[in-house]
Amino acid sequence: MAAEAGLTGDLVKVVALLGAGVVAVPIFRKLGLGSVLGYFGAGIVIGPFGLGLFSNPEGILHIAEFGVVMFLFVIGLEMQPSRLWGLRRSIFGLGIAQVLACGFLLTLFGMAGGLDVKVAFIAAMGFVLSSTAVVMQMLNERGETSTPQGQKAVSILLLEDLAIVPLLAIVALLSPQRGSAEHAWVSFAIAGGALGGLIAAGRWLLNPMFRVLAAAEAREVMTAAALLVVLGAALAMQLGGLSMAMGAFLAGVLLSESTFRHQLEADIEPFRGILLGLFFLAVGMSLDLAVVSHEWRLVLVAVIGFMAVKALGIFIVAKIFGSDWREAITRVALFSQGGEFAFVLYAAAAAAGIFDPRITAIASGTVIISMALTPLLALALDRFLPAPKTDLDGIEVADGLRAQALIVGFGRFGQVASQALLARGISVSIIDFDVDMIRAASQFGFKLYYGDGTRRDILHAAGAERAEVIVVCVERRQTADAIVQLAQAEFPHAKLFVRAYDRGHALDLVHAGVDYQIRETLESAMVFGTALLKCLGVPADEAEEIEADVRRRDEERFDLQLAGDFYAGRELLRHNTPTPTPLTKPKRPGQMPANLPDDLGGDY
Image 1 (cartoon, one colour):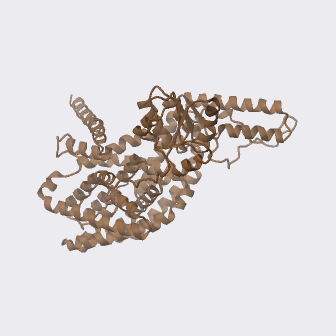
Image 2: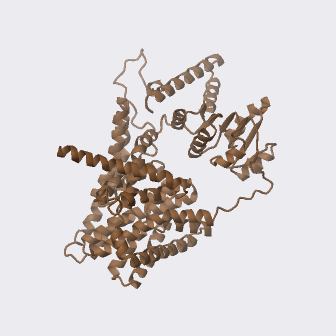
Image 3: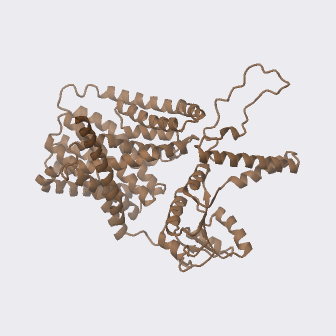
């Protein structure tokens, strides 16, 4: 009976966690406050200072940190090494400048408030480390992760994640406890070894391992392997004294150019979303309302003062590095809070005897409240500092359009796709978000209207409710997915024809229920290959038969992937592995080349 009662109690807690998120997040998003603030609020309600359903939020927070870990892994999958190398100046220039400037100003503020220099420095540097989870979640919700401004934000976050390593070593050096600083250099060596070991494993072991597992055609094993890579990389970095999130990010980067990237992202996504929400809930539960109420004046001054001083440092650095005033203010709104790594640093400072329990509680409460205020700052930014108006001189905005077909996006793909409709006399409305494209198209006789297809009001104004078909021809995968989701919810009567970015995107679109999708390079590559055969002397009839066979194999493989997973039907691909002819006696068994490209099959 006791065991059953314990199980029932645990189940009640699980139901409470899930229920709190399910109820709070839609309400907060409906109010325009974002999901992060919803999770924070729900955590406070069900935490030890609310309904009291949980008495140990720290334990949940440790487990929920894996949500941040998996979030960084997914980000790493989108960061090819070449792309990361291109951000090196932002990471080690802008990132270091922001950390040092804000750390210096916050340390002075803490000392002015009466803190000892060591305490002021550690409190300041903990607050400097912005919340990767909060900032990235907000960038995703705002659709700005891939923008230049978003890439600078990612660069700063990466540098801040790296900064936790020397900061922990500095805590050991500043500790009044004897012997705590003796192993600082050893810790650096261990961290370097762990980092090198992870890079070596990612470079030479991960792709061969996934190829072997893919050949076994066991989907659950691939999912387990994806979790093993993420958690194993996180563990390796933690054992080396580095952050778990940095280990997961590096693992993602090392797999970013692999053909298994799409499958890994799909396998991790459900775990990432649930655990990241759990992390925000746990942060809300960790807010010690007793300390806040007892020391409310000090906490209020700390929150306002630390956020204001950090905002000043961020703004100064942004202007020095050439940002305009709007970009600088936007970065202030995103980064002026503390983050999850502050908890790690403050716990180390408490263990080393630098922080007493009161300082630890006040500093942690200050960070949590600042994290909760960040979505409100972003909301205020959008309301009181709207995006600069685009110069629409001579350009019409979509309003009251009526046509059988609505084309969203008029780049190279959309221009060609429109020709058949126009040739048949089908009425067409075309919207695009690129002002330069609209002006250029008008010189060739096209009538385009300005409009963002990811907005419900724009699609209504463009006549989507009266269109028989909505043709999504935008280039970015994320934008296409957003339009598809919106169109299916608001205009279910219209058929959806969508340009797919690659094979993985095409599979996702079919699962999403679009009426027709096509990979943007498929037909041109088919025709190109047939022309090559004819150029090399293959008779036209035979070349066309070969093209038909390639198409048949591709369609069959696509169907197998829909029914199974991304690796199904690999045997239908024609390979260039040398095989001995029947008239030649092989000298040794044929072997697969060791240097096959990692991206084979990713877009085919």
